[in-house]
Length: 383
Image 1: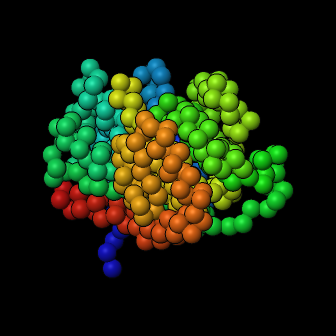
Image 2 (image 1 turned 135 degrees about the horizontal axis):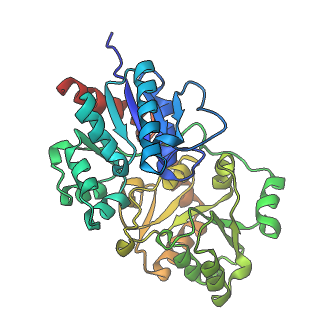
Image 3 (image 1 turned 30 degrees about the vertical axis):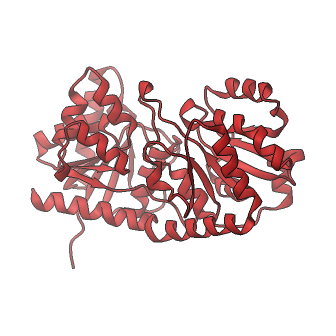
């Protein structure tokens, strides 16, 4: 029997209760790998130390300012973890934590891997500080979330031999098709409870493309007037989206729900008839969809998806099989794609069925954790 290789995952700022794709990625990975293979150090506070069967060390002082406090907190955290856990390798949630991997390799001889998600690679390539670029080039392996991110890493100077493609996963047990009670529909949709639902789940920022969906909505409503656009998320673009909805004459058909709990997301996905997020690349702000876990979650609930053809989304959505990819700058094409799905229930069902099948076969967290475990074991053996 092979002895499990134990690693330390460092995620200074991305871990629940912080929300977002990277936080979900890291916590799901810790849970799937289990305490025999990984423990986690994070600066995110919470009332508990981790979920059942997880070892999560929440040590804010290890990442605090000023640097003197951080040094003391970091030293104490490292001493505690290495005494208790004895890790043989280090995983870094993003390249922003990469300097810690370099430090641990220099002083303790531990190999390290870095997860690459897209935005931060662009930031490192365009930024003036060389530290992030040094870290990602020094890593024993870089785990890219999509083929798009693989190409970014190559542009950043990382050799192909040290890049592995590891897609994020999806909780296929939690996200599955399930009926939604009438009272629940009313509580979320109000007077629109009986209508067809177009759904977007994501932070309200320009990259996500909520504005394109609002521009497409009048065209959709001409063919399907019994439709409502439900937006779940919060962010700085909310006032702009509300104003745009007014200008387009669709304010009554746009619902924004900001305070939906993470636990309620499966219900929200099951409310919809089609999930839409026409994400675009905002390269000037180093903002791009490196993959798009929400597409997997919607597919896992048996829902068809429509996505912007940008960034790494083509790895999350198979065009014509699990959903449709559209140009992220054409409300006309977006509206036509949505109308096609809403008009043909059989076609919508088939996209959702194949999406669920693909999520189960290729993107369960057990599959992802097994891939990560193989990579970590290989770098320990090589060192």
